[in-house]
Image 1 (cartoon, one colour):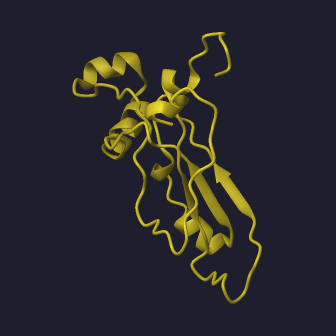
Image 2 (cartoon, helix red, strand yellow):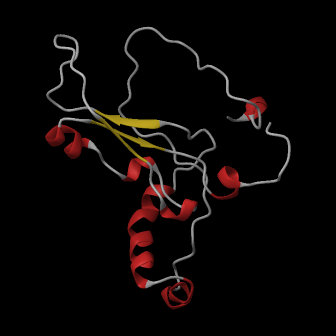
Amino acid sequence: PVGSLRFMPPVTGAMWTGVRMANRFSPVCPQRLPDLKNETAALKRMPRGRLEHLKRILPYLNNQSEDCLYLNIYVPAHADLRDNPTMFPVLVYIHGESYMWGAGSLYDGTVLSSYGGLVVVTVNYRLGVLGFLNANADPH
């Protein structure tokens, strides 16, 4: 939630009619990206494997916004649910990354969904202090 809804309990989303296009990913949640320009200094703070992984994912984490709490839902390519309603198993994948970096859009569920015959859901959630700050205060 942003604006006047920040730090407030959830509200029901607005309804819509017709087709709602969902053909692009939402922004990723705000996160403090590590400085990897000086590789020698970065290796003092993290193992090489983590450094290489971060170098691969950082280009996908630049489009940040507080309006980021979205799901990515992948269904089998052969599923025509209008003519043949079928129930598929659902896999919900929640990325880890030490609760500091990442986004649901980094994990493409199209292949697993189509070949595995299941619905794959990846999620964006708030990271760092925006998602895990504990002030031992009122729940609102």
